[in-house]
Length: 188
Image (cartoon, rainbow, N blue to C red; front, side, top):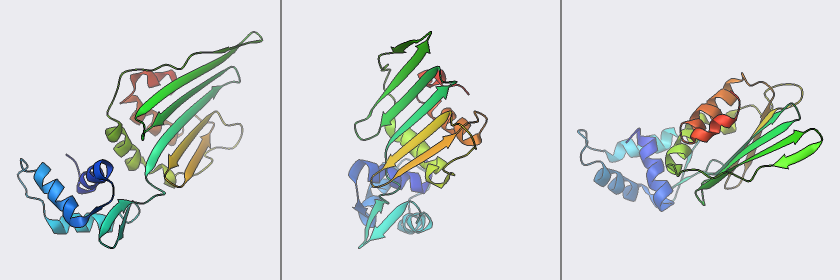
């Protein structure tokens, strides 16, 4: 099932804020087939270690509002002739892609494409691992060719870059492409 903090994230994503004891019960019941029994102390330890992600108040654990991912948008502009955008809404569990092209003084906007379903919670966990909120806001000087907008419960993180070789651009592309194969319409 993953690390302890991922197990805690699973519980909080399904149930919302919960007590440490209810998190313990749910993890213990869902991991009966594992060799090693779950200890309450390891849950408490994971929550304390991940202070940058979890909030503990009056014995209630929740994801910090500024880290609770609601949506992500990724845009790419290609030499002022094409524009691509992917938006994923984790609350409504839907996404859409848009394409726009300027062809010989004519504008063309493709209808948003919808594709097969995927595991939104699994993708969300991958985004938590990336810690996008810790990335620099502007990764390159000059005209920006890509933008990432991550919206949480009470904050918006906007990152921009002009190099397709930037490690951040490659990381986000790789993670999302693992879930949405059509994501390859973004250059790498």
